[in-house]
Image 1: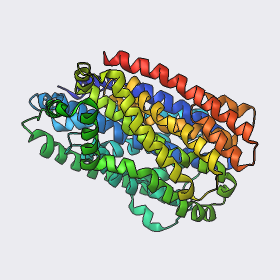
Image 2: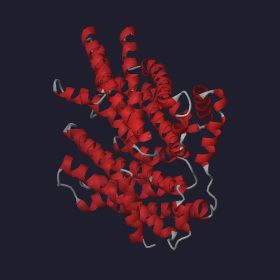
Image 3: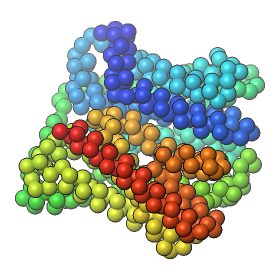
Image 4: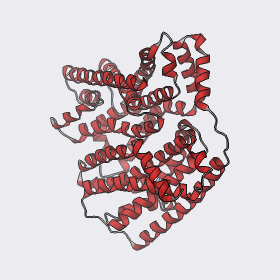
Length: 489
């Protein structure tokens, strides 16, 4: 199989699993969001988005593709074919870099117009996307599950993201030039502003060297973890049998015991459970120093909106976990097996909803005192937490209903953050009544109620926002429930 044949295969696979659709939606959302920013910060933020959009999405998408091909036996078939490791890696890098660069180009044209340097733009985006794809392949090659891959992803993503501190002048140091992603920011930024020749030479040269090193590591990972792997474990069947073997406990108890084992044994699930509180601590101790370090925005003036955003982190992360639970259970035949029990598919969803909504509500109650960005009276706080926790069901069902499998789930999950960021940004940056157009996004109403309480609005006004929020989310949950059950049949 040649590189051109592999490119066609990758293109069809990426299209089938919604990667192009996800990039299209992400591109539109980024474009709309960036166009609403003040001109003084728009270019710096655009450079950050152009750096992160192809980089992070390429990193996660290559992981999803490789795991799909491993679990379906595709990689084992490719290894025994004339396709070489070089052709495989080149195809993955080119196909994913193309999507990333195309999406970034549309964002730049929409937000900035055509007045940028195309050579530095294409070099910066193409090399950055290729770097992240190759790093992502090195990270995923040794794993057989998304859980393990996602858990280790932070080890790669955080160091590669550190130069953003220098980009926004939060921490300035020449040591950031040791990171290849500093070269990415320099080269992408050069498309929009004059850059010294020595920095351009550094950026191009260092990125080429970085890609060369990443390619060698990716090829070594291919040989070590894929070519030498001769047997594929039937993990899905093992999990299914283990679950069904526990049915003597009863269907609800079996699910509860299985979930408890998963949460205890799976480090990713533990990380997901604690991540809202880690973000809360980051806000508590990080917002003030960042506010003091930057001069282009007064974060203290947006404390109500920041609190509203952090208030949704438990629902967002737990909704992500719930969505993957449901996708895995559907893939492994658990839902089909439960039809022969008194629990049924609807009972399964009721159980999932009760567990995750309860966890989200309790976690949300902790967030306000944890982040320390404002104080809410007790009764409005409880009501807001209840409405905000409904987003757990919305996020989980969106993933489980729109995605056919966990690979598509990775793509859909990239959109979940916008459901929180977009309405909060509308409240912060757009005046009434235009901001109410963001009310089509379910988190808007609880976020609006939070800001209204902190600004001293009447309880009747706050209650009205929450009632609308409940109605919008319940209606959406009902639609998504029917869609999920239909896809499970």
